[in-house]
Length: 132
Image (tube, rainbow, N blue to C red; front, side, top):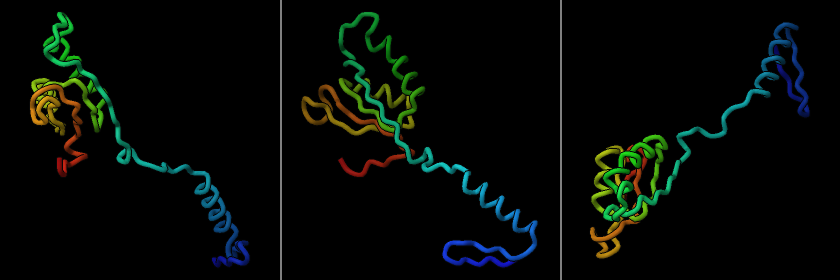
């Protein structure tokens, strides 16, 4: 079989069955959809105001709601989590419950560990902390 291209016209020379096969194959190839992007290129981001852990919230206090926070984060499986109003002990609880995450951030009172954090958690398997 020979294929000649002349001014964008394809001329096939050879057996009729081979020509029909090639035409069918090229037709099917042209209508097949291929994914433009794989899931590995996507980044799922969640923001979560967890309310500071020392608030006198009765049955909504951190000790009662933290398991729900962990479950929701496990369900969502975000790559990045923006966290507001987190205190260091809450961050430590989250890291213990979700060991595949790390975080970056500082306490706002002293720029180190004291006070509320507006930190970012990240999946260690997808991201690496370079500098802070």
